Amino acid sequence: MSLIPRLFGGRRSNVFDPFSLDVWDPFKDFPFPESGRENSALVSTRVDWKETPEAHVFTADIPGLKKEEVKVEIEDDNVLQISGERNVEKGDKNDRWHRVERSSGKFLRRFRLPENAKVDKVKASMENGVLTVTVPKEEVKKSEVKAIEISG
Image 1 (cartoon, helix red, strand yellow):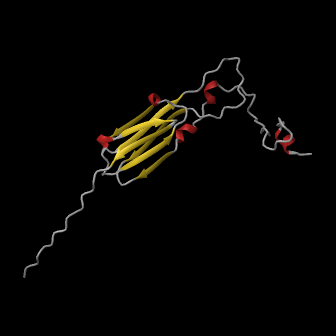
Image 2 (cartoon, rainbow, N blue to C red):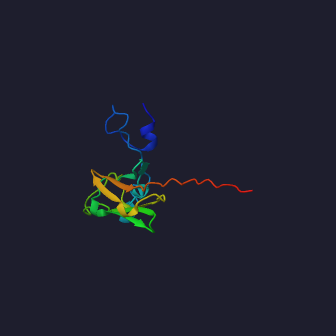
Image 3 (tube, rainbow, N blue to C red):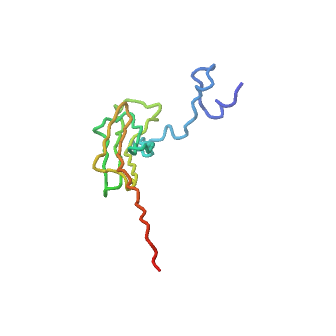
């Protein structure tokens, strides 16, 4: 006989499934306000930034949002800003939530772009919850070395 279900106060919905153990929530029956359900996991939206020979490419996973709910902006000619908001799902007062794990709330990510970024040519696209922002690069002019003759 296992002590784990008894220690945590949970019941297994399937005795033969070791992963079906529900962990006891000591705050389950407390009357928290509805806004307390929001969680800020979306605030830490993950963004990948890779540099190719032609551009800087930013890729962000933003599942469940439409392109109209996401803003991509350039500030001060050198800062890329990606922001948006996922609203909390509204339910009927008679609904009883068993779990709220999906994130909601505002998110904002900012990236200082290098000097070789062509900020006037930035393009953004969104497909299947993945935002891709492409910032083309200017060709770096190689500095010319001029030999100076030494007199004397």
